[in-house]
Image (cartoon, rainbow, N blue to C red; front, side, top):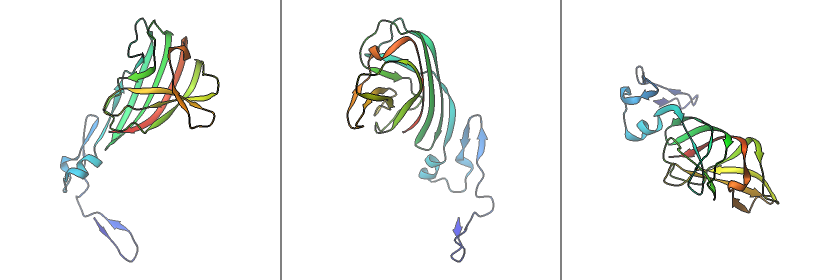
Length: 173
């Protein structure tokens, strides 16, 4: 790639951009420059996964519909999760979601739970959010306080047998 100093425009040499699509992955081995950083930056994968809602690490007796879709571009995973409970089961403890499609390397990515139905917030807390776990495929569901600074873990007490919520977010791999 070259840059025209007069116009600022970038020009790609002929035949330099030739990704080959194979299934759901762009195969960048057909690039003229196959440096490892370009390989990582241009990798693209998408698919579905089945998230698991957990209380204290378990989900005994829990039933419902658990769906997830994701797109990974380079070191970033974009995802949507939808969970509809028909029974929350007997497990207790802090709420988390397992089964993320790709291992997260950072837990500083947050996503607000949207379309929340039949969930109870602790007094003084305004919204639920999800944060990916660091070094794993499970993240935490938390509640954020009115001031925005204080947070607590959501627990099974926040959920009912008919809870529905959706999450759209992203995290680093």
